[in-house]
Image (cartoon, rainbow, N blue to C red):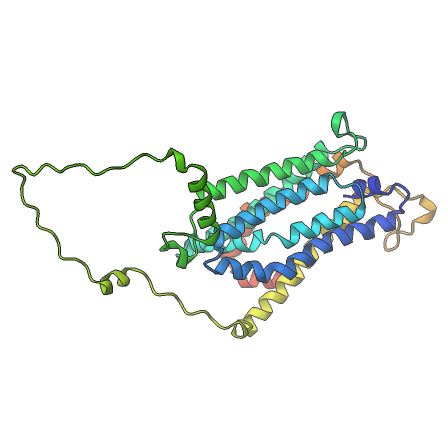
Length: 337
């Protein structure tokens, strides 16, 4: 990000670049905060559903990556980040879908633990891809957009994920599982498909039934409307919004706010520190007061940041299970805080 912002404004100081990087990251997070509840309500309603909201989030994130790669100014980059944050709530919806696909508590816990493992794997591979595909000057037709290739690659990953969700994921919202028409978005897709391919439908006609000596089949008595309604589960009553804010929920949200704020701030500052040019020795007063950074190139920054992802994978696969079995989740969480 440091070199891309430097590409936007070569005359900007290192302090201004660091401020702009914080604004870009904060703008996306702020947009997610403003629209997260709205996407959650749409995911809980029959007009949307989990699958529709997840599809919109993946496609919007891919489009935002393409626009960010073609940005040539700081304002344009911020605008695409706001668009990507406002139109997606992928993390929350993914956790909800994983929990609903595993109704049993023991399997649900194991499934949810896979999410941070894959996040660490993304932190391992993502910086490598960004460092290897980006360049200062660019080449060929993308010379004017040297940082577009890694964003294209990420957009392709989003497109593959959206395709997998569309064809392979079943709707987990209970009220839509027994609805033959599906959500509002699915009904629009069905109507569009019928209009486009209505001329390819096979003609149907009645045919005479052979009334020869066929054995008599005893028909079951017709089912009453009461029995038919009994097959559909009753819709669960929704908890009022003001009753959600219990003491445990507020404490959990506060703890998550502290952890997420620390991790996002550290990753942003770490990338800036690795990219910032080295300051002259006379302007440095280590260890508490110093200027400049390590002056690494984009490829070296990608390798350095991928080390954090590799450490996370090792910790979650080897160290965390042993500590979790010995101390439990709550004690580990308190210790981490």
